[in-house]
Image (cartoon, rainbow, N blue to C red; front, side, top):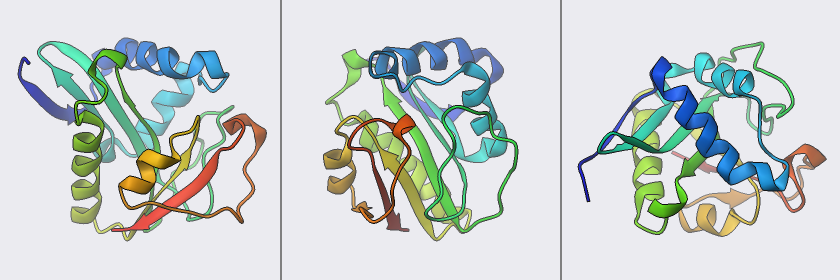
Length: 163
């Protein structure tokens, strides 16, 4: 496998990020507009990354400070930047041909180390499309008492873990 690196998102990465996001979420109706995705990265550039394999963007993670037990509205761009000890992992995507190689876990470990060094206390997320098993295996716990809007899809569940 060519060299792999994780780096901060640059302006030239957005076409690849949008294409990856659509490849994963368009079929389930969970895909977001480009402006919404970019707004999440603008809210916290220090906690958003791409995973590069050779010259190809093979994955990304978007995360931003957000109050615990709250989550971004998928239908709108971020309008506020919160100050919160909770980092909300909004999206982590790995290209289909690179899944099951440990790259998602690698990107997650990088994000967790970044969150720890930036003094976040907790990471939250909304598990969609049956991904709760992956997140549980990585230390996240469900909060089934929190109702989520239909825009997150059937069986979506809010999850979090202390750092």
